[in-house]
Length: 297
Ligand code: NDP
Image 1 (cartoon, rainbow, N blue to C red):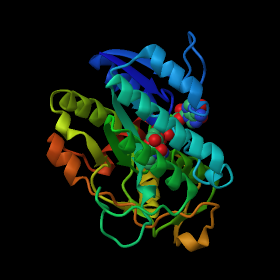
Image 2 (cartoon, helix red, strand yellow):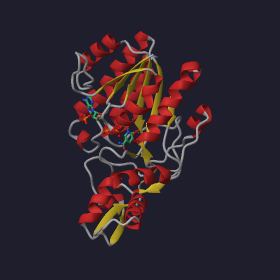
Image 3 (cartoon, rainbow, N blue to C red):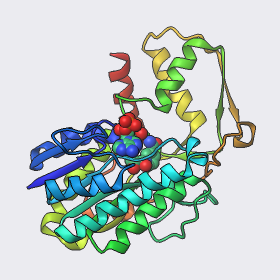
Image 4 (cartoon, helix red, strand yellow):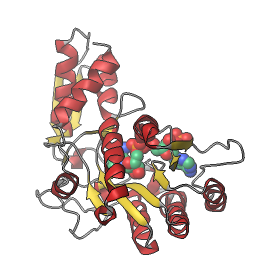
């Protein structure tokens, strides 16, 4: 089985290099050309050529334009990478009879209410990044290719930049940290996403009716404020020297950003857990593991 992985050096892509390796012959690309192949999603024609040359059985797309605020001023590029390039992958997957595994976001929802969003809920993104990711999802479905789309949220990895690492850095520099307390979600490890992806691929190979859209996040929920407090408590409890003395909860309205953020990022994972007989661990277990790795504790 030949697997083409795009975005191999992102948080999720890095972990997929590990989790997909035992499934088949893995060709992993980033945006730089290697042996005439290029995984640059800003060039959909070259991407199409690369997919035709590789002729994979499975395409796994971990590449995306993920700069949420910048997407407001770079809408065309975000659309090309998250929308048009995904459409190219989907069209090529359909003509090859290949599977396309793709990732999306809770930012396709408008963040209203407090109920965890289900796969069947109405989408209505509040920022351009969310709209571009939604365009990608819709292109996959419209192509008719065999697919799995995993919507996830608040992704972190030991490698790469993420909220927890930013909090650790700021906690060393500042006595007071202001952290948003009214956005709620589930921090989800890139390693968990990659492991679930590999397990789901194994199952859809023998049970293709499992194809479709799934919500994939760690169990439980937390605000950015409580997540920051958890990270800082762990660091303090493990002997890190920090300058921070006060963590102050603030509302989203007190921290204006170019892109609006949904308040309710909760995702309901029942469909994924039931269809694939999987258990999703609580967010604290993955975050603790990442912190131990990052802090070498
Ligand atoms: P990262 O930002 O860590 O990685 C994205 C990768 O895409 C990077 O390696 C980046 O490469 C690559 N990339 C960006 N533009 C291009 C391009 N034009 N051509 C080729 N590669 C490109 O993202 P994550 O691993 O966190 O995200 C994985 C998936 O999960 C994405 O689909 C994302 O939308 C989704 N997601 C992420 C969330 C998060 O909190 N991070 C939340 C919800 C969903 P380079 O480093 O060279 O720019």
